[in-house]
Amino acid sequence: MTVVTADDVNAYADGKGIYITSGMLRFTENDAELATVIGHELAHNQMDHMGKKSNNQLLGVILGAVVTAVTGVDVTNLGGNLGAGAFSQDFETEADYVGIYATARAGYDIRSAPNFWRRMGAEHPKAISHGASHPNTANRYLALDQAIKEIDEKQLLGQALIPNLK
Image (cartoon, rainbow, N blue to C red; front, side):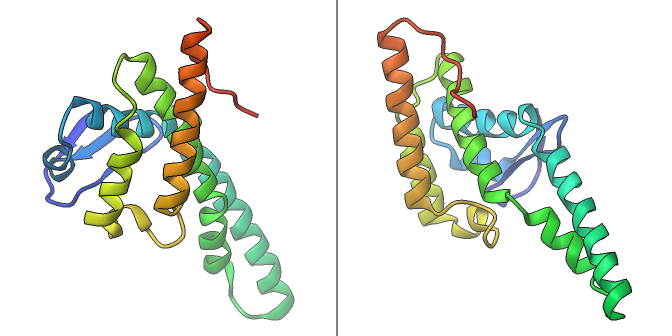
């Protein structure tokens, strides 16, 4: 994990590393909240979201080039941008789900995660909205609440804390 000196409240993954701004470190109120952020970013790397985004972008560029060849209007960059944004909400939702499992396996209290993201949405809406790339706070809260119930049930039954991926 690398700390980036910046006042904005942000964290991101690049497929290999996790980067957290000093603003995010100040915003998190305890280790469990920081673990929630790290788990989320770790999940992006684990699930290869950057690689999938690059593949989607390449496909968009190719489709844009085909449309450009047919119409004479250059939409190659537009195609790439649309491709890069494809499934981004799904990636964020998956990172929340897989990340909360990682946070639970690391021994942190995951019950504060939904309220942490709700607080982020209320106090720093631009930090988590990024246009349409992130799920809205209400959907994120409900999905995390459901994941926590799933983890609780697995713990009660003595089952391994492994996400139920499709």
